[in-house]
Length: 136
Image (cartoon, rainbow, N blue to C red; front, side, top):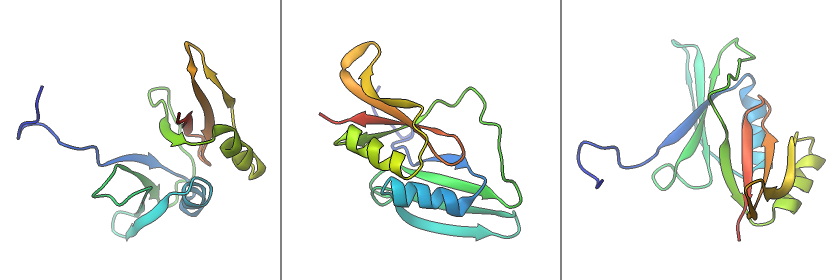
């Protein structure tokens, strides 16, 4: 299938609802190294959006964090899987994150069905899973 005017041409962002926007922004920017690209309050809708990424939005897909004012928890459900991020040294990354209190439910190691791929899973402050993948 080729690009046509009828199909989207690029992934823009993935949206996650969060219970504490400042804590989530600190996690994604301070611990995972993303840049806070923009943040906007919408008083009439009683929500705030924050966009974070490793590159500007016109260059790469980003994460949109949505904070609905007054809502501090969400049921994560079973349909959403995870976000995946590349890292050059998965063991050092996990050690650094663990020292900051980040939950690592799956420590770094070979993937179950392909030992040539090394992965780990961490959780953000709301419990969303983030897969770390060792770059070769």
